[in-house]
Image (cartoon, rainbow, N blue to C red; front, top):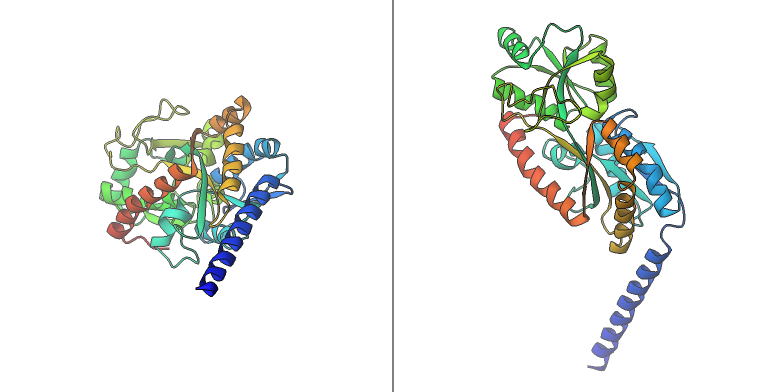
Length: 324
């Protein structure tokens, strides 16, 4: 009995020491540079959003937030780096849904998105679009579908990578349109957009922030917005529903994640920094210029969003047989 009581006392002391050390660490956080990994190439939506919010987060935290692009395997390489980092708040990532809700059902990823990661804050939602080069003969989504039905497998569509939502959105269009567009995966949105303009692919499914500048410059034509409602940034462009394909919906979101085990108080400080950032008019304006809009949510709400999206896109993956 004495031994049991002694062990219990030692266990309580250890627990108290851990609690107090965690509190002390959280109070001192941050005391050095924070690294925000973008698991996609520079110039894409995640990269643009990270660079929009990063400086404001630096101001709120009192320490630099440095952006590091680490692309590969449809975002899973960069996300894995975060999952395996020290859970101390100094390594975070700006991730989209591909590496969190789609890729885990298509390949064996080196992390468990529900166990190895800590959602910190959903930052923004973005409309996704179906685009062609300005010189394309396709003026409407109906034109594209008609041409694809006449030549199955001959028209190519580019995505930001196998397993990304832009890939799955194309497969969903194949199902709903009863067509067969040939998928060409890229290592990010930016190279896919470049090849679309270069004539190497005929269609691309993109998150709007990645192509808004080309659309505004007139080098790309938008056939449809893959949303229930028209985009505020493109009020004259019809939705997929208005074009006759109401089930082709693939609006995306981006948010900040860290490794599992990150102290809750540290997560709260990071969330507060994001919240302070999106209260700045210049940050909101910059995000809007990208074709996105602020959709801040707490760690708990962001976690629920990820779980819900996993169920939705797993069904599409199972139905289409999409693979990486």
